[in-house]
Length: 357
Image (tube, rainbow, N blue to C red; front, side):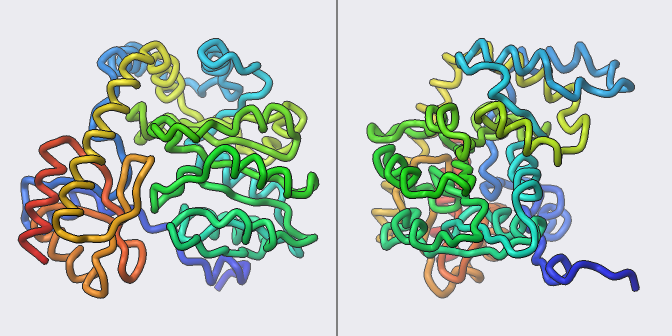
């Protein structure tokens, strides 16, 4: 047998939500609702699909590794200088690349838990010790406890805001205070994959911090709001010197041709983003009412999913839901994450839940 690094050998691989086709094969179900992967239930904007169709014949050529046109398009849309933008195959790739860049034997990474399942995996890939800090009693990142958990050997901190899988968030004032407490030699990635969905008045993006502080990066993605999850395109914002250093660990050509074209086109329709925010909030409020009526505990969400406590029968209930053609995501012994779907899909979930509880 080949010799594998011990931390990789013992690694628990990321387990994505079951795809629709697999559930259909397993249970012989035709009509399936997938609410397991926080995907946007809406397809890309029609103009985005048309733009991709125009360039699909050119995929025999390598993509622009520097994402020149996409970088300039995003810079124009956001007012962020192009040298402060870095693109990758989804924000997940950028998290992993940065982990490899700042990790190594004798280092540690700090993050809240439960949170994005890739954080502990990234720690292993980066040969760093994973320090998981439990969430507070409101299912939020416990920033005070995280600050205390940072050690001299801590090179990276992940802050998922809003947090996946709970949908909870910390206010801008809380984030400000936390960043002030972190040593300047420790890099902080504020993961804002779901920031576009937030409607809370006391939430602001941490991008200004990333532009001002060399030890802060903000991660964003086109996978969620823009419905481009299958194309894998995300980006990081930070000071140019920081980005130049960490991106050295990235492989070339990671953002494909279609992804770059799709992301550029998607940026042209901010008014439709607002419509999707409204539709998502209506879905959240519908499920909030349904769960409250059934006295089911859940965490108030600022994302496009809900964290629901189904109790000790969670595994059995999720299996029964799957057999009803509704796929959700079990991420703990008692809690389940349910993505927001279309109004019809949300109603289908409620009816199925009533049938199996």
